[in-house]
Amino acid sequence: MSTRAKATLAASFAFSSFIIWAVHYQQSREREDMFQGVIRDDVRRLEKMRQREAEFHESSRKREMYEQVQNVVSSDQSKKI
Image 1 (cartoon, helix red, strand yellow):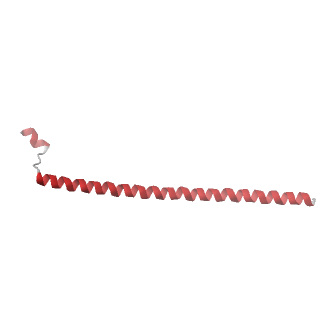
Image 2 (tube, helix red, strand yellow; image 1 turned 180 degrees about the vertical axis):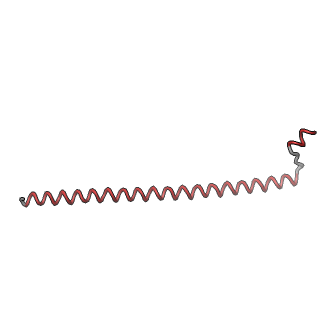
Image 3 (cartoon, one colour; image 1 turned 90 degrees about the horizontal axis):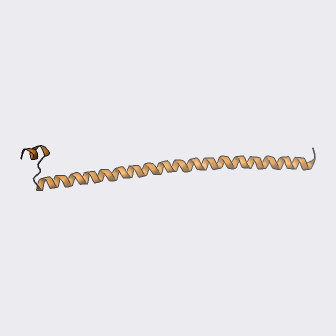
């Protein structure tokens, strides 16, 4: 084998190795980015649940306050009147 052929073989081996490494590196980065997206979605979902729970408690508090101030008639009693 000539020196030129050996150099070409070594260069193609090095280039192929670099391409394989780059693809694996890119895949691992994409996998990590996708995982971070899942974590961000979980945080958003939990925050939304906390917000809805707070709104529910506020609504319940207001309802209790209004029921103390106003006369509340249930739907069964309103039919009798």
